[in-house]
Image (cartoon, rainbow, N blue to C red; front, side, top):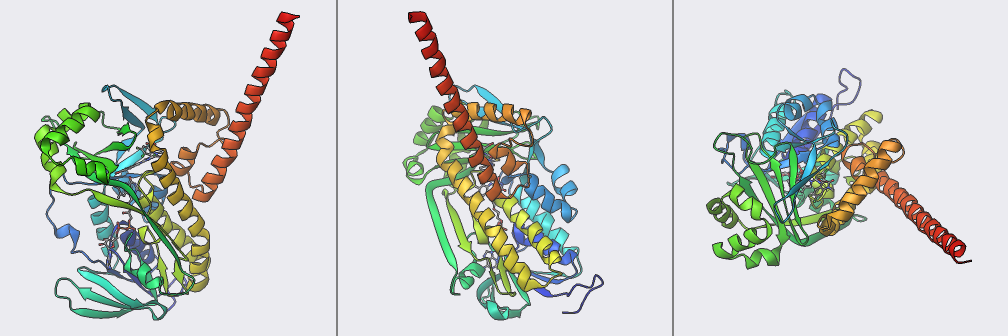
Length: 451
Ligand SMILES: Cc1cc2nc3c(=O)[nH]c(=O)nc-3n(C[C@H](O)[C@H](O)[C@H](O)COP(=O)(O)OP(=O)(O)OC[C@H]3O[C@@H](n4cnc5c(N)ncnc54)[C@H](O)[C@@H]3O)c2cc1C
Ligand SMILES: COc1ccc2c(c1)CN(c1nc(C(=O)N(C)c3cc(Cl)c(F)cc3C(=O)O)c(Cl)s1)C2
């Protein structure tokens, strides 16, 4: 395409999927002066009415914030709208609570509204004159090598053919662009559904408009096979997510059983949610599945690429899915710039470098899901946190705990794992050494005392 004022070629980019990652990616491409066409299956969510108490929220941490910052949105979307969470608040069965800080006193993650984020990113993208949004358009097929796409207008089913020099698939965990890519040889794909489902509930604001629980915390009710988590909303309500195996959900098939279950496992949450609201919200919708997707490579030559959940959907037990997708946008922009928008080599480098990191965080999230039980015998969770924070305070640049490196650093996810393995080796050796010296000391003491 024509070379813009910065000397880089300008191309026509089609982004499929106007969710969190697609809209942010549109801002990045638009900022570089490309012609961006964003195609979204759903209608323009900004025109849909707001259903109170149905706001879904997410934990945004440094990786996601850095990506928003580069398109000038961090201040507006996070500082002004996000609610800082400085610690986890763990709710014990007896109703007692205990907080575990995320890090130093100013280190926090932010609770942000999904719909607010998506609407704001759409509006930010549309501000660029070179961005064109097309709603109610569903990608149904494509010839990605030629940059050709076929969309079906909803609900008329009218077909529209579109061409672009680059197709970016940001169409989520069940991506149509990825499905088209998988027709190519040498494309790997695996997906894993876990036996747990999730369902959102709501803790309403108190009558005086304040939060019903301490506001700046990520609240957790860890109960082994199931768990509840609550993030604060701007309107002083809480969005509560219940994670439970589908067969457990199936047993709660009457209001009586539901209330008995909550009174047994989450007694302190029942008055906060309210019994009527608990029953109505719980039976209002079915639990949703959780899937983990790994695939690769992420590109086809210089004409197609997948990012976000389309490339690496993960279970949410690290609060990194959106953060990783936003980080994709930032890293893609950097690698395109590095290659002066020579798209072919840039996409190849993006896919080669990003895939091991994406697969690492997918693995860490699944590991957390399996370890979630350990959040129950909090001793291990607590002890590891205390050891980690002690060593981190002694050797801040050497000993970076795994959770800190994932949530509070830009360390490539794969390096976070290597870093953790190194630490485990050190910890194991230290414990072995301590144990051995303890034995030696005891033997020495015993020997002296006896002879
Ligand atoms: C319960 C739960 C809790 C989570 N908590 C967190 C958290 O705390 N922090 C965090 O960082 N992440 C979290 N995540 C992950 C986060 O929600 C996802 O990583 C993020 O939404 C991915 O964004 P995306 O744009 O890639 O995909 P999506 O948000 O799924 O957007 C895909 C878009 O593409 C559109 N689309 C799909 N198919 C087509 C098609 N054929 N044609 C056109 N458009 C199409 C869809 O309508 C949608 O708008 C959580 C996820 C779940 C399930
Ligand atoms: C909206 O729905 C959801 C659902 C799940 C999550 C989030 C939002 C946000 N999540 C975060 N997880 C971490 C984390 O690193 N770990 C190890 C944790 C993992 C679990 Cl499962 C947990 F309950 C607490 C922590 C914790 O440490 O607080 C963060 Cl840091 S944020 C999980």
